[in-house]
Length: 128
Image 1 (tube, rainbow, N blue to C red):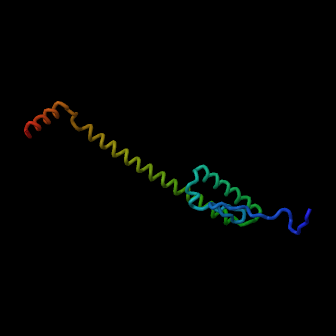
Image 2 (cartoon, rainbow, N blue to C red):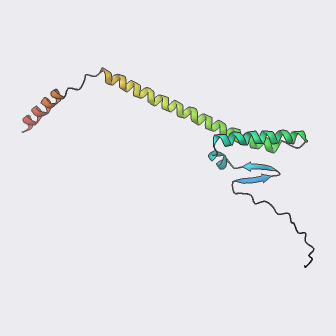
Image 3 (cartoon, helix red, strand yellow):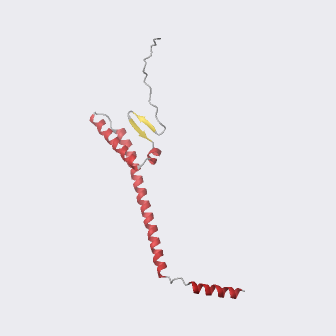
């Protein structure tokens, strides 16, 4: 056995994925990652960050990094909520237009195939 001066266990930094950066012990999420998260994941991330913020406050550490990340997550939730409302209003408008068109069509006379056939025959005879 060869003895070396290096310790057997070295401090190896954990690889950080492209979607995350570490700030101390806080995950910093990029906005494009937040944009593709499910609503449940966003909510869970916000709750996790709130819990970590409270724990940090208890031990007297700065909560600013947690507050920043929470703000980004909350902003993404607000954007999604606004998009849902806008989409719902859009769909309501389309449904109103369809109802208006249906009401107009109900006022029109019923289709009379015999009358249209007679007109087509007369038109054809006139042209020939």
